[in-house]
Length: 91
Image (cartoon, rainbow, N blue to C red; front, side, top):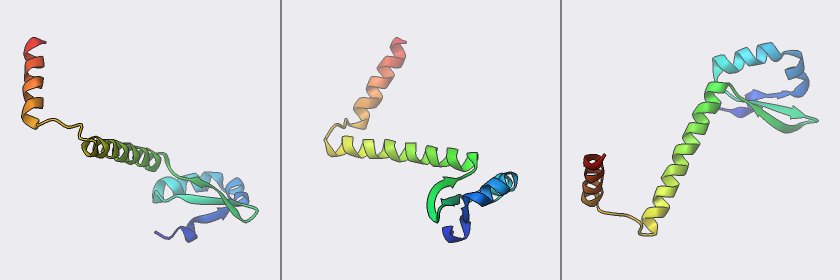
């Protein structure tokens, strides 16, 4: 996707807010808003925003997991399964 086609001045947003919102939800592409010729904001539909947040959360979990492995804070799978089975039997 080329973001250069999705750049509009703030005056366009002010004049076409309803149309912009409809287009955002249909195309699911972000819109870059400029003010005085400089990029100032990015608008996107809620579904895309939520998907982005979920992706970022997953990437954070993966990064934390990689840090744990690199630091040697891991246990053999058999040990973990045994511990979980023991907890389940107690509860």
